Length: 129
Image 1 (cartoon, rainbow, N blue to C red):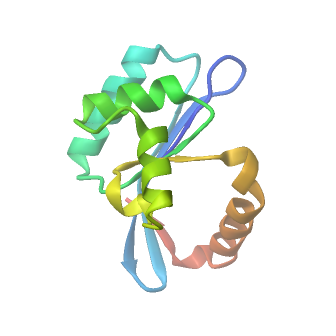
Image 2 (cartoon, rainbow, N blue to C red):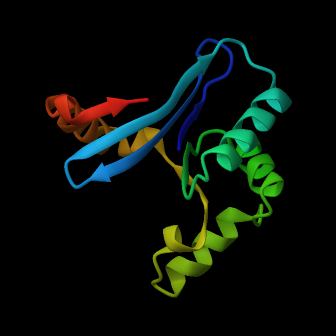
């Protein structure tokens, strides 16, 4: 699951995908919400996680209040900054220890755009339900 919790001038977007095989990605869910209510989006997100049995949630790190609320709602520790620092000190891959993973869109945007471009170039292999 990927979430861009845009508030104010931009939409709140949610996408859920799954690999079909090594060359295909299936889009299970994709939607955007205009001017969403915080609690409504929290409920929608938790319901989607449960409905689609989502294993990882990648979310824009620019919205820590939503990240904390989502982590609490699914039973994960909300002090994720401390948790990330701890795992980094131990040189562990902290992604393996969390379901909700904050991603800095403003730092990793070039890599994400490159990945999106690659997926678009093989779009004949992307299917939707």
